[in-house]
Length: 440
Image 1 (cartoon, rainbow, N blue to C red):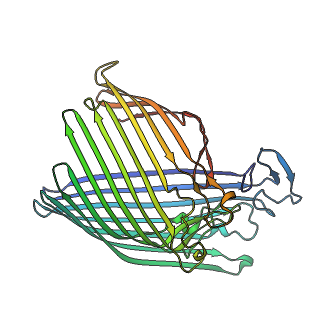
Image 2 (cartoon, rainbow, N blue to C red; image 1 turned 135 degrees about the vertical axis):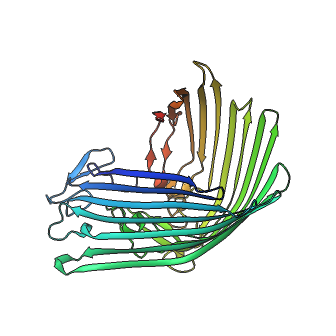
């Protein structure tokens, strides 16, 4: 086992929010869709036990300092963080003529955070106020013809943030500010080579703006990094789509060749204590291929699907903190994975307008390293092993007074294999889930 076990460290999160949407067709040419939302999140992190545990859940020893915690070492901790998040998403489209559509997208997000450390004494860094405003706007033109289609767009990125953190011994306040703005653009072409075959080449120069938790941390195990830069990338895709209909059978095949040339790639750097952080890798590249297919048989009663992805995602830095790992695969990223599924439906079994669906899903992930592959001895490096997981289930759907009711039962990891998440964190074995969905 790697890392340190914790017996009484406690963390929880509570969320409450509201979401409002509208879809207005102002006239036969002009349409606007809007979504407005608010979410408040309260996070609690408690580390007040002086006992030190082993991996069997047993008390190994006790710290002499009564004010200590399991992780904190020389002091206990109970942190509360409050995040307020507001967002608006607006898409307005105007039909210029039969072939051309103009669309404007506006997407602002605002987040603010404050906190409280119950055992802070005279200095409490969690009371710092952090604010982050992000705005991404885009203007797109779609031009459609029988044999081809062109989608061209430009984007504007804006992010502004600041934090005010109290300094020890009442020495004032430390202020950090960040400001970024830039442009991106892209183009997608669709060629209908035949009635069954399409080819879609595309290119985009884009930015990924850091999230609030990546910049300001999570108050528990992830530290802040107010100097984190946005990630920029050149993205290339060449996609082929094949669709064949014959009688009551549909066959679909898809392949996609992709490439990303990334600057300032944002990577999570873990640690055994509370100093994990998001940081920038100077340069990284990703190239790969995706293959997939699906079919609908027997009047859509039987559906089969399969897809697989292989990617070479590697560090290309010749300077900076990660230059010594130049050529290594990016850690904690699977490079080969696949999934498949099948379902069969029965209609009008118990009553009219009902449907019973039996389904099976398979997911395979090839082994990969959780850290840089050139670091240490390859024969003894931590590896997230191969995983082949099966899920099976059944769902029942019925209309009750024209309102759908769906009840689902699913057994995940049916064969009870060992399963792992990123960084080798163990996931549950065989587990039963029940879900009820209705509308009113």
